[in-house]
Image (cartoon, rainbow, N blue to C red; front, side):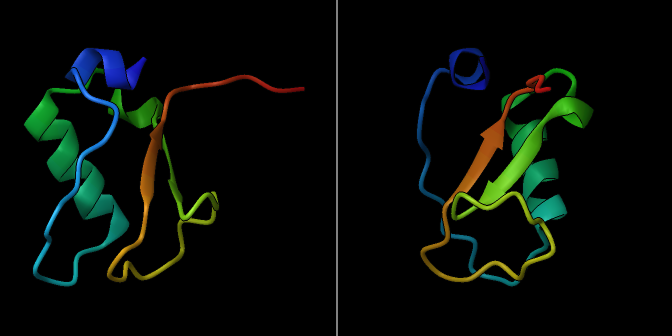
Length: 69
């Protein structure tokens, strides 16, 4: 859903500075005009724990809303 709306499945970024995961999300939401950013979850290196410091070569996934039970 997100990949379709932004027209790509992957993007490699050179951040060049220490930024928080929330700042990265805010930048990407603005850059790609992503609708309903509050519903998007992030995963770093396939882990939903967002209390991490971003490092070189980390993979950040923007996950659309999903339901579970």
